[in-house]
Image (cartoon, rainbow, N blue to C red; front, side, top):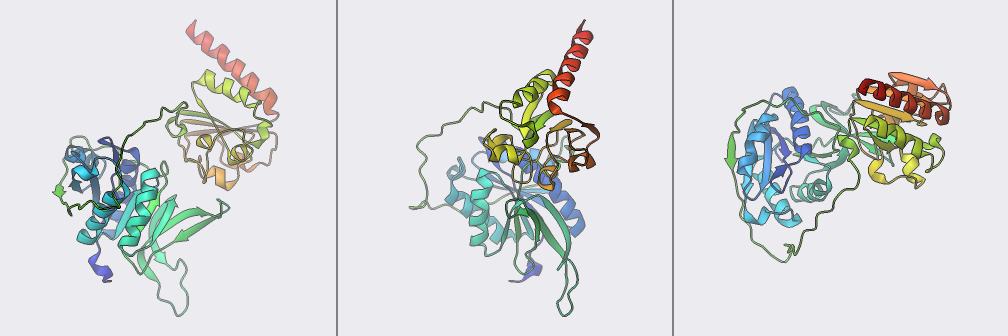
Length: 349
């Protein structure tokens, strides 16, 4: 493999029902940073049927070029045709870096594509940067520069691993949703579109979709919430989350939780914040009864304002909090809720 042939940072621009997923815009934002460090450009790869009109949106969020593979076989996501399309793009254009969102689709697609193009894949990354490998120079071993350093939680979130793929290309990663920042859209940007189609020959690996049933979410996605009231093991019981729900209702917010709460069976996994849950960036984040382990903090430290309530004055959560209250949450939270209710009522009067 001639590594010098591989150039550019590429992003798989996931779309569902001809609507580009938010993760694609997040990846383009990070791709711009990586491309700047490498003095190269950013290319979005858009797969689907009748999707060419979406290309300008990708340009608005930072794509210098958009490669479109448009074919009826790509109308709905199916592993085989999508894997064939993306691996064909990689073999044809030879990107140095290929980023895929760690969504249900990306987690299925990424490993299959990496196997087909004979490279490695680092899954569920939370940090991407350009640097040297090995990280520290080792006597007798060449230190390679301008490598993609891919950081992810390992061993159930109990440690952080930084991984490189120095001898194969592209350097591939799936990236957790919510951890990368979109750029401010460039209004009126027009895409430089290049159409490519490797051809599709359906075989016995092509799944036939008989029906698509769309589920209706009963809860707000915590990644979209502007205000989160998050509870940890210190809340004490699933019943005691009622006082957090009351506070969230007054604020027009959403309840979330730590991993300990999910492990205890008090709340569903969809509400978990942290390295093994979701990464959130609300305007206000209440950390109630949460100690502040690094695994949790990694999922919420980019919140605009962090308010911590904990009876342990030495809890690590206070190190990242903008405002902290030491005391019994069972007394503090109801009083805070009543005070906010009174303020809101007075403001409406």
